Length: 493
Image (cartoon, rainbow, N blue to C red; front, side):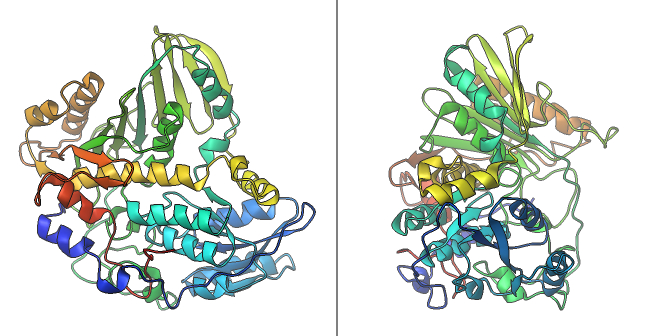
């Protein structure tokens, strides 16, 4: 099940001397950015252009008085393919394989970051230091420390930094949330988010795999430990490896976690968290959970979040479970009804399940335009997904994963006992066990791993320790990581 023992925690998490209080000697230095006038063309550089970044190329090129002038990727083959998008239409674009060189380019006003998770914060911090605004894909961090440092950098260098949680720009969700926040449905009792997406086995390899000649693996690894490739696919499947990814709660789920936080209008982390789950249904090279339940304990109303990667059953492999019709979305349960929706809008229902209001949306297609508008106004308040929001939703994902990774396999009765007092969570846990049974998972042989409750010092953004070997003490070893020089997130930005 690829669980993390305490020895692994120490080895993976303690800071090296070189990583504390030092800026990277090879990273960008602060530069003065130009003042962008309302009629000037904004020049964008995009980092990571294989998948999501390719979409960003198209999206930014559609905007008025916006030009993509540079692209960067560590895979020369991918880079050449995306360069062809420009040359086919008679345009020119600068290409880079080293993001540091791209950030030195004074002809770039802003960067869009669509790399693997473990690179997000460092590139964004470097960009702020180089005087550039930033559109950073979710999750904006690989751990809580670096997300906080990105927030600091954005403030220190007076940068416009947008998080790629585009649901915040959805034309249906904006009025729907205004409806909920107006009090028409009464007090919010709890918020539930889910991510039910089919995640098949990524296979199992007998040993290290070859790296394609077109890829600079040293730059691909960057801040993470330099280890051999131990999976079939370098691309995308990094999501399911702890060194580079954050599991599905930090991949797709971070969008819905953000919707939960938006519902409660939260700006701080919860006082405590617990998470339980496992990677079940197959034995592969993935490490993250494909089945997970998390409880975020806010005093006024809790957030419950659930991940499922297995299908409805072993007999129905082409369909996923849902909750109130949602496979990825959020349910805001209030006294007098509830909202159910997600990307593309949603609906209001009364307590009998009758639809009373409709809020169709567009999926947040205007999110890049919102970023450009804020660049022109130089007002952070114009951003719909300011970096502080991105730091918060990413942090909740990290908190849930930390509790899960500190867990131990235990019985269903023990798991239920840990969430005593949260009736809805207990019902969801019962449903999870039913779901796993339908997928022929032998819970006697592979029970869920149940994490501890972790208390959070909200002001310091650190877990509360009750002794040297308490869960909080172990959890604090995941606040940051052992960065591989020279790709170090500095203590002082």
